[in-house]
Image 1: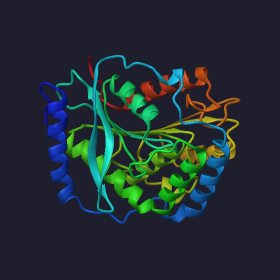
Image 2 (image 1 turned 135 degrees about the vertical axis):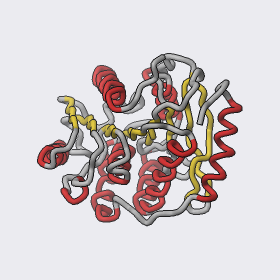
Image 3 (image 1 turned 60 degrees about the vertical axis):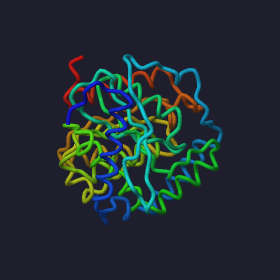
Length: 302
């Protein structure tokens, strides 16, 4: 699949193809989180405490202009529970041939302006970016609303799994991406790992920003996906000992990974609208993310 004269016409063409793909798309019963539901519920409550005084409103720190012109559109990429799911689809406007893709997974606030801005910023680095929506078209503006949306996703984890499976099919089969990575923050960080576990031999990289992890060898043993994990030492929701157990298991199993722990950082240190935002750590984490993706995905020569 090639993209000639990228723009709104290309997006509309992709959307028409998408609807055809969705009509033929099969469902799967695979659910990577099924055995960890209790831990997931506990994680919801931990996130509620961590974000109790945060806001979803973007701050000036979130307003980073993409480094090159980007084309972006709200686009249907999946059908879950008989409803079309729309994500934020972005790519460099000068793209000629399909580029590697990143499935971007929102934090507990949902697919909001902050995530769309990050998708555009990443697309400018030479990637197709699909920022998915795991909350059924809703985005929270208060911590309690975010808690309810996250809990609903936990209670319907099979639907979330189907959503991400179709996202992967969209970027590979419809958008033609030769390689695919996942990237997520908070709630989305945990699901970035789950995406790697869904596609343990096919996904090319996974980035986890302070998301829920596991140390279960039975789940991590099949994993052939390089992992970048970015965590805060003072995160009370994703505790450091759970991160170290995850790291120890990856090491024991001989996996390819890098875990970066930022000393003194709390949960959501890279979220510019949160009280724990640390500009220095956020910039370092972003640079590490770009370097990691560049090392594992074929980069755009421009």
